[in-house]
Length: 66
Image (tube, rainbow, N blue to C red):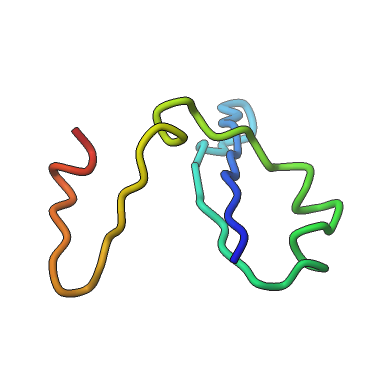
């Protein structure tokens, strides 16, 4: 499964708030679509350093976000 970081910048003059998403998909055709590629951003360094697995049984999101 591929994962990419997608960011939409805010534009106050147009009333648009910024947002950050993680897009997950097995569909390579979709992930290579120009409209998807236009929004992909590089992962920040901290996200590349350590892998964290969140599961349904137990996920301490406070610890994860610190």
